[in-house]
Image (cartoon, rainbow, N blue to C red; front, side, top):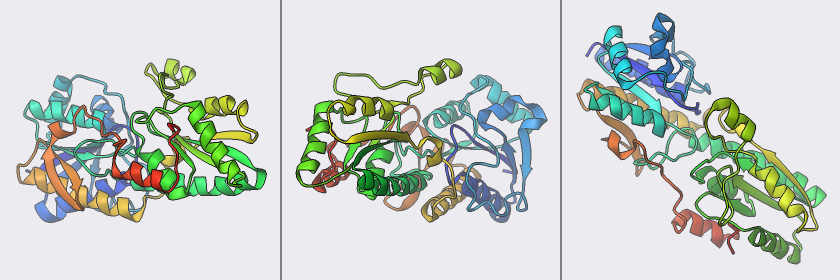
Amino acid sequence: MRHIGILTGGGDAPGLNAVIRAVVLAAHKEFGIAVTGIRDGFGGFAEGDDGLVALDHTSVRGLLWRGGSILGCNNRYQGTTEFFVERIGAIGLEGLIVAGGDGSLTMAKHLSDTGVPVVGVPKTIDNDVMGTDQTFGFDTAVETVSEACSRLIFTAEAHHRVMIAEVMGRHAGHIALHGAMAAGADIALIPEIPFTIDGIVRAITRRSEKGRTYTLIVVAEGAKPAGGQVVVDELRTRQSGRQVHGGIAALLAEELRGHVRHEVRSMSLSHLQRGGMPSTFDRVLGTRMGVAAVRALAQGEHGTFTAYRQSKVLLAPLSDAAGKTRMVNAGGRFVSSARAVGISFGDD
């Protein structure tokens, strides 16, 4: 194998540049393989030479601690599987590394099924890719949420407020759960556990009866009330042509203002969760996964993705991740630990 490509699909995540750096350095040093970057995810295949960039050790200098992706990201797939296969052949790629979430890994699986040597690297701050204990980007996102919520606690305490922080998590509540636990939040609302307004009010009331003058609520954008629907950002949904979640914190604030004596404020952390310098853990995990992906391609172990399991980076079939979502186990150890330290999920 003499020439491989790498792309970063979907949304950006801290640690992507660490993966790119590791792929380029390992490919050159261990195997003498040339690396071409495809810009803007799969969209780069439709841009001719403008969508390609040659990568070498000078291209990746200083990338380890840099957020975002020097290749750009795109969660729209402009073309068919057949088109991508044709472009891969025309570029002269003998293998492809796809760093992305469930959508990108599903496309990687389609390409692999046609015979293209593909290895996936699971990436998402939501930590919702099946087959891996953790994705890079998640640790940094939780750190960001934890720090922001810790700051909110001080102002909530000073003004005796209920503060609601909305975080990412359309289908899975890993960020909200871990962020709430790390920040010492009082209520965590996640898609896997439907809540009720009465349940939230009871949790706030119990705190008031114990002399607590504030409450911090962390809510995933995909959380919903029992028997209800997720909150959709209508404007962004119309503009993008796909359903975009968002606005649940503001809606909850309106609901709660008529039920509690505290002033209620809301905010959304939005894309702050994606940005910033990757944590040490995400830099190391991204590096390990990038090296493992190169070695897998060079050794003919394609049709796989790099999975982090029990502190080891292993190879697993792309079918383990493609088209699947890793949810929070509502009866699992993390939720149990959260309940044990007094975090309510609005369901009691």
